[in-house]
Image (cartoon, rainbow, N blue to C red):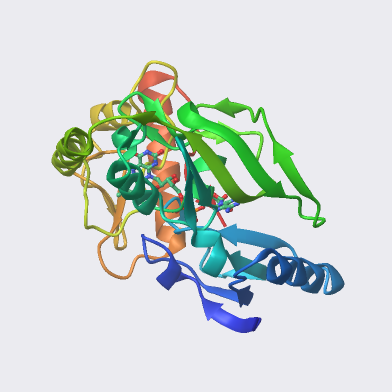
Length: 281
Ligand SMILES: Cc1cc2nc3c(=O)[nH]c(=O)nc-3n(C[C@H](O)[C@H](O)[C@H](O)COP(=O)(O)OP(=O)(O)OC[C@H]3O[C@@H](n4cnc5c(N)ncnc54)[C@H](O)[C@@H]3O)c2cc1C
């Protein structure tokens, strides 16, 4: 496995922002992943596990460490009766499509959430009252010291888990038999709903802030009148106020400035402190 140097990270993110990684590699199996960890340890480098890059803002200065993107065998999806085992690097959309094609139900509401299974598990991704943790039974992880562990009862919170500092190798999903065409219909309806409420196809990083308990962060932002407000090429989406769009050449600093403005305005108006959902790298 080649460990590359000075790799531009913006191209690996959905918002297309960010500088270069000092080192970058794409291990295809556990042996290569361990090699990468040894490399980082020897050089005393921090590591960052990159999924689909759909919930991160990489700083303009880049990442002074090793970025690891799981590939090859980490993208496999296998079936054992009603259980689908998906590698941490598999696309969530592929897992959902595979489940539907096997007539296995439970994940349809997550249709349209971009990114990988690993990223979804770590952040407990969810939509339409479902989260990835609902059907997840077992998670295989590697600690950053290279120890493999099977976690039978991972802890999940709203858009969070106790797996943040682990490397997700695989997740097992226990699903219910159902009729494929019905699930496909459900998937299509969910995708339609999303295209009405989210700036799909634009360069974004998903929701910037977590929803405070029982309140929509997007609605709080809307009431500040900031819809469409812009810093450089970073703009608050008019379609979904909790999304920031890169209109062309936005830099991470533009996004950070916009995030601060939103946070201040929301606090001034509602006395609520918004916390970020998006991960700053
Ligand atoms: C248009 C759009 C719509 C979205 N809609 C939703 C939505 O409805 N619901 C929702 O929850 N999210 C949504 N998101 C946000 C995002 O898609 C999810 O959070 C997704 O699960 C992130 O996965 P990723 O692979 O892209 O992770 P990344 O963005 O690459 O990384 C996010 C975090 O996960 C970690 N990570 C990634 N892979 C692994 C791994 N294998 N092991 C350990 N850590 C890992 C990273 O280190 C980082 O801390 C949306 C994003 C966009 C752009």
